[in-house]
Every structure is written in C-alpha cells, then in structure tokens.
Amino acid sequence: MAERNLPGLGLRGYWPAGTDGWGDENDVNLRMLSALVECAPISRVTTLPGSPTNGDIYIVPTGGDANKIAIRDEGAWVYIVPTEGFIAWVKDENALVGYTGSAWAQLAPSGVTANGASLITAANYAAMKTLLAVAAADISDASANGRSLITAADYAAMRTALSLVVGTNVQAYSAELALPSNRVLWQLIGCNMNDNTLDQAFTKLGTFTNFLITEIRAVNASISLTTATGGIYTAAAEGGDALVGSTQVYSTLSTTTRGLILTKTVLANGKRSDTNIYFNGNANQAAAATCDIYILGQPL
Image (cartoon, rainbow, N blue to C red; front, top):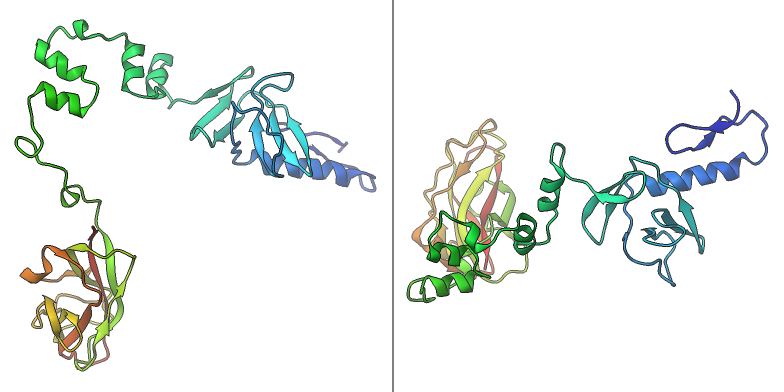
C-alpha cells in the first residue's frame, strides 16, 4: 500500500519499506495521539500564556488560530486543526465540550433540547429563572407568602419570611446533625480469635481526634467461629470503656457469611476521643482462627 494520510485524525502511515524520513512523521503522529486521546485542555477562553510549560494544552479562543488545539512541545506551540466530532474535557470549566465544525460547545446529555441544555449549564438558580423568564407574578397558584418564599434570595431570607428564629423555631447547625456518610475509623486485620491473652490493637485511619461510632462489624472469618467470644476496649487488659462486651459471640460468622454486626455497649454511643482501642478474647476458638474487625462512624 502507498504512503498516505489515514482516515479520522489524518495520521500519516503505510510508508514503503526503506522510506527515509518516516520517523519524523511518526513522531508527529505520536504527539497528536498523546494530546487527543482523553484530550484535556487547560482552558478554551484563556489567551495562550507567555511562559507556558511543555505539555500544556489549550483551545485557542480568538485570532487566526481560533478553535485550534494548541500543544506546548519542546519550547514551541504546535497546533492541531480540529474536525467536527472532536471531544475534550476543559479543566477550568469541568465541562465536556465538542467541536461542531465551527465552534466548541458544551455537550448536553443525549435527547436534551437546546433549551434544556441551557438550563443544565446555567450557572445558578437566578440564571435558570432568567432563562425561563419566571417572575413572582407568573406563579399564579401560589399565595403572596408562597411567592415570597419562592423568590427569596437565600435560606436566611426564607427564615425571615416565615418569622423563624434559629435556636427557637429552627434547630441551630450542629456538626453532629450534619454528619457525612459512614467511613471506617479503626480497623483490626487478622484478629486472632484463638488467644485470649493478647491485647490486639486497632489501627486508627485518619488524624481525627473526636468521633462517633455507628457500627462495629466483623468479617472475613478464616473458619466458622463457633466458640470464640471477646470484647473491644479503650485500654489494654480489658481496661477503659468496653465498647463491645466480653461475652460477644461470633458463632454466625463463617467463611461464607458476609459479616456480623457486633453489639455495642451504651458506652460506645456519643462523642468519643479515644487514642487506643483493643480487642481482647474471652473464649478461644480452640483452633487457628482469624477475622477482620472494622469500627465505622464519622470523624467530628
């Protein structure tokens, strides 16, 4: 086959055997692929910087090279002319854009109309209301007070419209009332369930000081734990607070069960600030046996 430009990106290839200079053209191919596969330009509105870093990629916003993809390579700008269908993730917008053949435009989900796309990409609720041309008078089914709530600038304005006082009519913000989802706070991997003489320390996962415990779970038993019992404490030798009692059984935990939620004591509830947590066995399994134990909750 004769040397030629290939379909799609226009890469050069099919050099006849013995052709000179094919290496330079192949380097151009590789640079284009490196820039366009998962293409992620820094910006499509910023003018090319005067002191760029090799590897920087931009979409040129204006001028004679407008809409071209600019790549900084070996101290110089190299330009790629896009064709219709090129897609790029623009970093400073966190947006997926596509080239229409004449301009770069943010992509909307499939099946969304142009008006719908405008709403999806609106910067805020005020912009949405502007796009929809919605005014308080247009909300005919709402009372005057209802319209005041709908058009309120923010939550503070809503509270004022409802005559609500924080701490009297509305609960004040509390970190414990706005907790993130559960995460693993402490873990004990390979807990020995056949030695009741050990203080087996949990590993703390994070730099938090205060925390709430929501669940303590045992998983990954090496064998069926038919006889093992043991508790979890905040000091060695079963000292400090008992978070799980010494008579906790693990008989439902086996190699085929997904896990066992341990019974927390009253002391495990509320805010805690322990610096150490230990597992202490009470009754041995009478055979080599291990499991993993995780303490879940939220840092405060």
